Length: 330
Image (tube, rainbow, N blue to C red; front, side, top):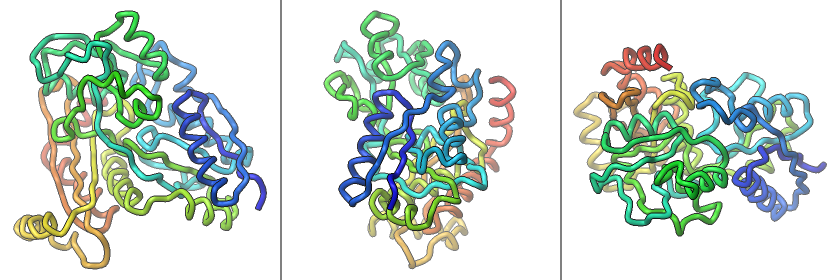
């Protein structure tokens, strides 16, 4: 088999992920070459993501190289992927998920969102800003673009008192010593795909390459979770600038017993079959000003149907109007 050309962004975190994939593939006997590609999201740092457009901000240039054949696969933080891919592209693997939580990072370890104390948090995430306004209105925010090292430099220089980041990136870059607080997913449900690395390729990539890459890199349980989350996001037509959140997890037998009763009562029992491991998916949307939040949970087997069912539930509860208002005000 010829050398696998792996496309990646050039940030330290992206390169950590790329070398992780490279090592995984090489352990399986493949030869891998890393190709660094700059994206729009890396080049434009003086505007928020919502102002430069959320679709393909971190993926468009990588996808162009997939189509041209210059690279065979592209690695992405799964949470950065747009909810819908073009017909000539596909996702072939999701790596095993890390801890999915958001974390508060600061040089002052005494800081806590729960303390009631007012301080300034840096974040570039529309979801995180809206959730802070909803759950912690005493917290002030400042837009914080750039790679993790740049943000840590801004934190050290006093631009903000703390950063709100994904645990996975903080862990991979060796900044866990600066975590002041692990944020509960009960309040801060993460972005769809948070904690996993996704591998994308052109549909035309040789089948034997796809099969081998998938065999070595894909984590089936994570894949089922992310398929459900991405189906939810796709139905809502969400992106980086839309404050949508979603998290799927595999249901254990005790949870399944409880959830079967609840689902039957809600006339959604068709979502559960006995063929594969059931999932529970929690997701929703929060208004830009944090005044309103819609959040629901469903359980079932078929990831795609489950994600769509959750989305329909959110839309029927007023999510359609909330989405329209959010898009009109971005």
